[in-house]
Image (cartoon, rainbow, N blue to C red):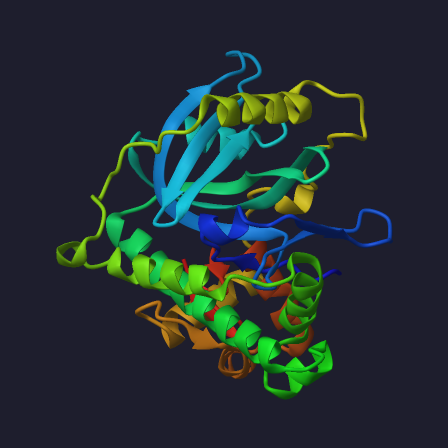
Length: 319
């Protein structure tokens, strides 16, 4: 069983700057977007204000589109006939209102040097402002970690993934940073430092934070037209396999006995949902009767169903 891809807590400002895509050679290999700071992203967990929610399909075959605004920019969201549960959940959202979305990153490149990014949701849920604020804080922690890692790589005469791993960074991030430096060249670290500071200030209204429910950001007409063309290209009923339904494992299913047991362990071990280390969770699960294989399978299932997530590498937290 393949490990479930981590759902990154990713600000729009970093994700939308990305122009590097990597796909494995094996059949049905996942596609990753490599951000300028080296995050290798297939899935994201994003929280923000939903705006411009609209059904651009039909009552029989709805296609819901929306924008999700975070402190750094806008992420485009769309769900149609192949994501029926997510589409239904989107249709019930309050606009403007806070929402949390777990989904897969989709890319479209109509021409060389141009790439549009959107998210196809697996899970959609309305949340309170406190959940958005907690997400922003965790997003800042992850952004700071990537900034530190890239800063270390910049100091090296010939940065390698092995050298970054020796400094304590995970292999996937270390490899992503090396690929990002080769692709993007000089990475504007100051820009992302500013993004980090502005996002932290966003949590302090008296320091200039934005309103709780901002209006949708204005976009250039050409950008909107390009995005419409992008969506039409991937949402018009296609001839398979250009667009396929999401695998059944991505759907909302009932919990297995092991998943229920693991969720109880997480709730009991981390009652305030502040996050706990993977190794501590594994030990707690073992005491509860979950062996290594059962623990791994249950954890993947809970990640898949959007009930837990990794706020940062090596940590687990209940949503």
